[in-house]
Image (cartoon, rainbow, N blue to C red; front, side, top):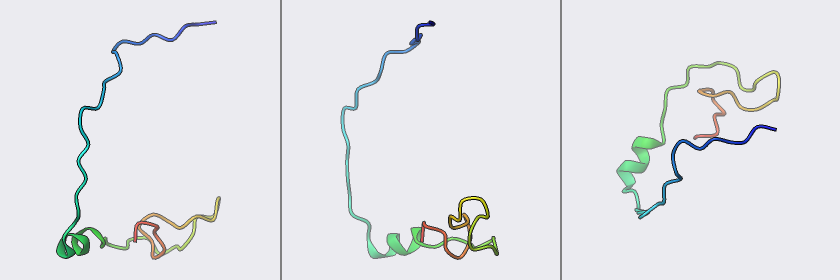
Length: 57
């Protein structure tokens, strides 16, 4: 059985910063262009990316 080779040591996170979006920033990131006319994918019945039911909205 082969052993895993790690080229680089894992990095430690020093800091995480959270913030609150302004109302205008929320509007700016809450829109995108709908370019797909299908609502769901045929294979797994999930909403199509860039479609009307995209989960990012």
